View 1: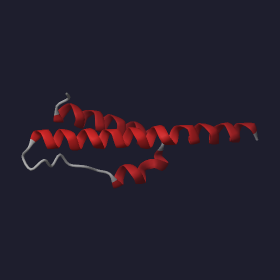
View 2: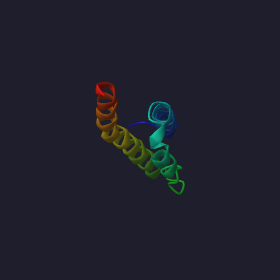
View 3: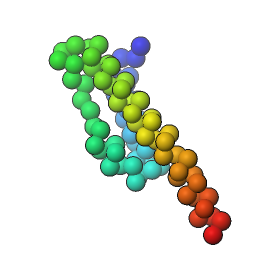
View 4: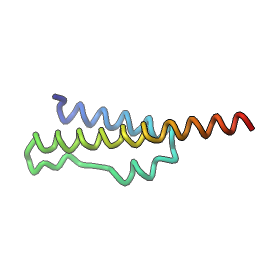
Amino acid sequence: MKTERELNEDILELTTHIMKTYPELSKYVADMSVKASGGGNKENAVKSLTNHYKYLEKVMKNYMPQHQNSNLAHSLN
């Protein structure tokens, strides 16, 4: 299991990638900013951060096919 620090680093890396590659998704990334608030409970904080990372992955993966299809359509015109 990853630590809070590792998860925060992963989230930062993924967020940066999304913002650079798909800036139009920034509204979703900004809406989901998260703090590790487990009330002092590291297990809850890690769970919260893991869920946040999975959410970011899902947003990006769901968007990628649409973005690729849009680019393909523009290149065919």
